[in-house]
Image (cartoon, rainbow, N blue to C red; front, side):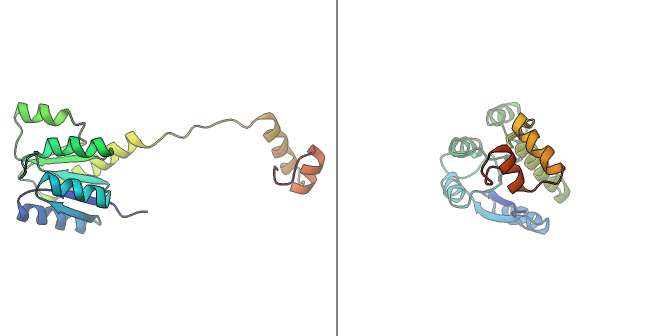
Length: 167
């Protein structure tokens, strides 16, 4: 399985490094750490992370929510908001971005790892195409019956007037 890459958008370096250390200990790789939206957008385009952990109040012109909107306009990716804010206005703005998880600071490592796993599971379950099962057609059933009876591909092709590459 591909190693899951995480992009951290957090303007407090100590917090960002703590998040990175926790995630690396859990087996995730860190695609990068950004303290502002411009850096986050560049890192996203360059590294294509599997999950973005984003503080809501970051440096620069765009806040974390606006950064999430800008990134998901490029390509859908799961977001886990990690913030000290739980007021109604912030939650309402965050909800408009279809985030996968929301974790309040301060947090303990177990809370972060559970939130990451939840965000990944929710997003990739939602965005993974469902397999469409189709029943075999009449010709396919006929070939299967001949295979089951012990005939070789050459014999089946000859009997059904097909190319051996079709069987």
